[in-house]
Amino acid sequence: MKPKWNTRYWIVTIVWAGCVQATAEPFAIGPYLGQTPPGSTAQVFAPGLICDARPHRWESHGSFSADGNTFCFKRRGYVIITENTDQNWTTPKRIKSIPSSSFSPCVSLDANSIYFMDIDNPSNFYHPFRCQRTSDGWSLPQKVEPLFNYPGLSHGGFSFAADNSIYIFITWQKGVGRVRGTFYVPYVNNTWARAVKLSVDGGAPGIAPDESFMVFNTSGQPGGLGATDLYLTLRRPDGTWTEARNLGPRINSAYFEYAARISWDKKYMFFTRANGWGENSYRDTADIYWVELKEYLPESYR
Image 1 (cartoon, helix red, strand yellow):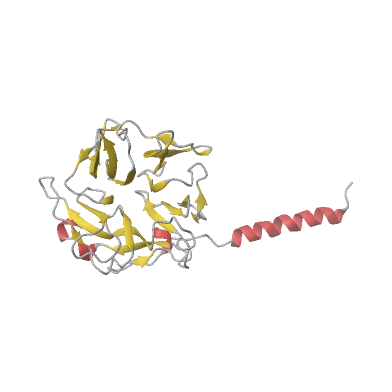
Image 2 (cartoon, helix red, strand yellow; image 1 turned 45 degrees about the vertical axis):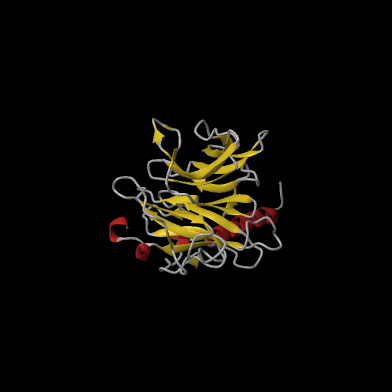
């Protein structure tokens, strides 16, 4: 028979552990990780929770699922996810099956897939991949076929509309030349049809869920404020797009603004602001920002 003090020791230990668990503070509580909504001037999203505002830190490409209960982003080389459960928001956790070479991660509408760009070996060009949620965690990356099967795809940034259609910026080799542009990829019969080139030409398009407007990044335009700026274009009733306009100094800066994502209620835009492209960890810094869109949209587009 074991000594009685040993039994009492384990009882005390179990009770203490239960008390610690019961009183542990959740990572975050409430919509948008409990953050106070921004106004018309862009603010860092969830400082101290998601974004580390100190120099030489890197958070980028923030996106929410359609129900607002899953948030995916990139921290340095890793894709990170946090989810709003019955125990409130979980501590952000790396999706280990997504390699550090990935680019432009985006959570699907139903939060059951994470899409991203990565190098496709042995071609050594970028290609879209996805990892799917399983009962054992996240699957290994799967190549998205066949719509992106362009020879020499070298770049891409994309977002989803409410019907799962994709808006993407790509450049690829075609014959002896190079083709580039912003494309619409409709989702038909549970698969993506071939891409249709749009008149818009800008990087990493962020589409509104109802496809009524789009924000993209570009550089070298008249009136530009920095390395790359965010521009807004509206979709007309006939399906064409208005001339893009710079979103101005309350959103753009002297740095790089890119990777716009529109919230599913169309109230907010999330984007990345950085002083570089993340190739030098001793020099480059990036944060995810968010801003209220009301003042930037005509009333019929809100």
